[in-house]
Image 1 (cartoon, rainbow, N blue to C red):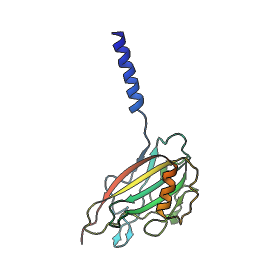
Image 2: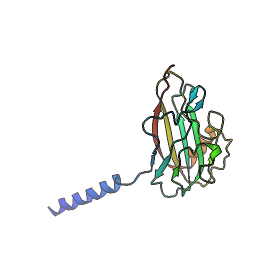
Image 3: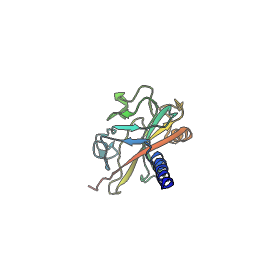
Length: 185
């Protein structure tokens, strides 16, 4: 009986320590399961407000020295997807980007952070704008915990190169997915 009780106690401690840990998590107060016209791009036939969503993250792994955020549409009919937003060199003491931080002219991103060019050809947030009638596209927003203070890149660095540096310095990542479609008019 004593051995069974001891075994059960040990089992509960192992399960709790293994599955009860806080994990690196990304959330948004502005974004649910679907994007809206608030996030939609304003251009290319889209007429949204082009405001990036508020994002916050928690439980970064030990050793995190900076963060990066990307927003990617793998469903874009390009053969390689579409990069909508890339922010890197976010200081390790930051755990939130406010709504519309992706508007490069407002300077709402944390000091030292860099918003590089997207597939729209400019730096900053470029919201969803799938082709009319193309169905739902998924927009994957990911925060990366990085083991370096700086990727040592500029705002003119293309998404593929930024992605390469992110992957080579990543400690952990957390994502949320929102869907968006445009009906034929």
